[in-house]
Length: 278
Image (cartoon, rainbow, N blue to C red; front, side, top):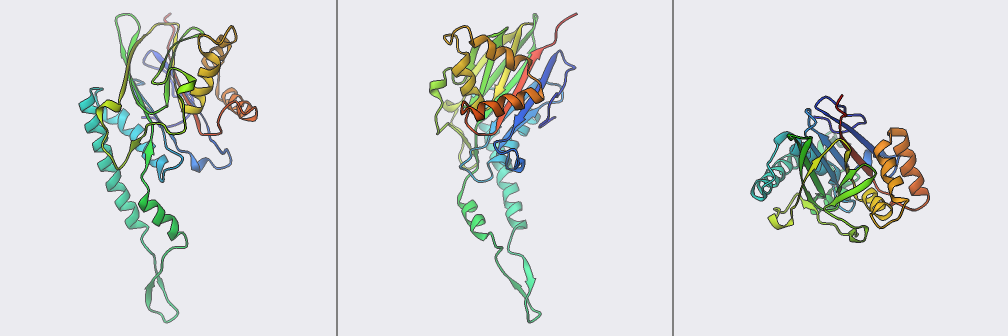
């Protein structure tokens, strides 16, 4: 299972690449997006930790990792139970982490052991009242008699973009840039998931297809400029993301930010496409 990196690889009939640009390049440790790819390149997850939530990045990473390793099926009941298990693991790990971060014992001036709160105790107090939250997008790929079939599930505004050549076939779960907002649906570490919040999509891939799993800021920009009614320039956007490599992706995001054409947020893309048959 791979969690990050570029050029995750090929080997099962598909090429997979992961591209990432932090919201603040000089502070990559603040990264809140999470990506996971199974070792056989059949399961993929992209989760975007909410910027307003404490510990959102670690929660997003747990969701992504558990999806590709635990392998829940996509029935509503299975996904609801899977989220419950993730929440249980999160609670256990957070309890251990907080125990380890308890007030440190120090020696006082009189040589006696005393206890004091860490200098950033206010942050821990606020964190204790906060709840980790993240969007979730998962996809599973399966061989089909002709090409590949796939299933995707989503909660929130991380998007799957299904391309055929240089044209958009389907955007999921949001199909229009106007649908993005500042309060997306989120998976909470403190609340069970209601089945009616889960979105489902099924599709097939042929040799001309590409699937992109993208975080919200990039998805909104691509749907703004690449939708079917955007005119002849729409195809150029899809051509770029179909062919982009790591340096070109970083330049693209940097230029979009400079032009204020994309929100300054962690920007992530997983590109999945069938390998040509020889």
